[in-house]
Length: 513
Image (cartoon, rainbow, N blue to C red; front, top):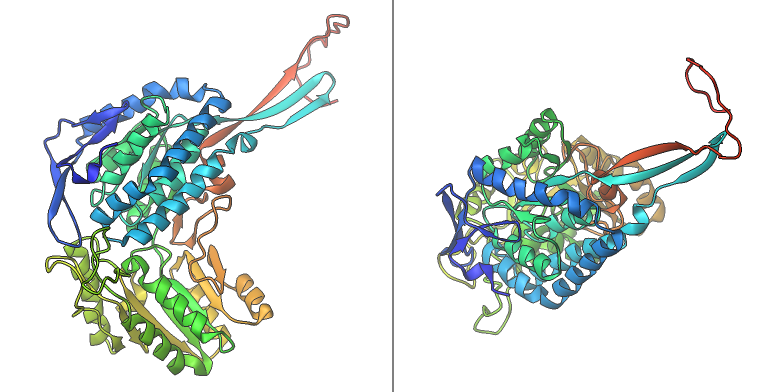
């Protein structure tokens, strides 16, 4: 298999082959660790989008009628190929996103969980059967595929987030059009080639590269039946409204501002390790990153000191397979995805300092182990942050951790619940009663107890509350199966050839007797 990351042209994938498109538009794809352009991604026109969607539509009927046995065989083959070649995919992710190689491998592993979950989908597609609900009448239920579904995925997880959706959609009998981020699009083509090698029929998995024009084509297409989206809340709101207006079912996962509450009885070493790992992993470019550390009671000074000590030891640099420092130490944290995003995050750091937060650790002048043209920003730690500050209110999506101090448990819970987002939160404590109460008290979709990033395993659903989710269906798990299928209920009467009673005319509403 060739590596799309090193090719100049990053194209669409339609009907089992690369498709250059006709728009003539393209955008640069860069290596964030060097700042150098590594390829040109095609940007679809409306005509390109319609061609890719048409390929998915042409394959939908046959794939929807393919046996569950055959579908799961293809899923198992895809899983085995992914498992054996995940190193290739990790290198592609690192080259275009910037996260270090170990983090990219972790992303793939979490996505593979959903592939493995989808391998057992036959059990979840079983219907029910009730005999003799009325005289001579049986009822059974079934779940049918939707047809063509669209997936719009973000830059921060170019493999994992699409894999939250497409394994389940495909296993359930749908065909897929994936619109990846134009910032790191090559992983999608690698996955498309892997599906083909696994035996997936042409047209079942398609990739539409592009920007807003491609997104709007998916949202407005009468052929596309459902949209799965992950990204910022403003765009999630736009996707939800536009797709709903065009009669589609939508799951739109938006932004986050995840709080980690540390109670006075917590193990402070565990809490400090967890805050650093969850705050600065992948340079903070995770929707489940911890961005607010809530210190309850008298532990604030000690907790901040321990977090700062650990954060200072983070090695920022190129996390690619051949990039090690002169001392032979691999980087812990890579660059931000683009220069524009790095500048935006640095602007938040400027605002935090200007608005009175205490800068404990400043990442703006980091000496990164990588090219001078890389999009570098080191770990940044603020103390004495208040809810009125921009660094508290806004989703920064970078390596910036804000410490807010409160006196009581009740104040901490009120802080979490007052926030506009409700994606994830965590509490650190050795008190089981306090943890149980926290679980009940906070209005958040995913909760960790001494677990800073509570991303559920694949057979539980992923999704937040409040402005972190538009629509009422979470990703993967049984909710994902229900999202990508629709129910039918069939009521049946077979006439007994030995007993043929005729009911006669009866215009009243049918009654079960």
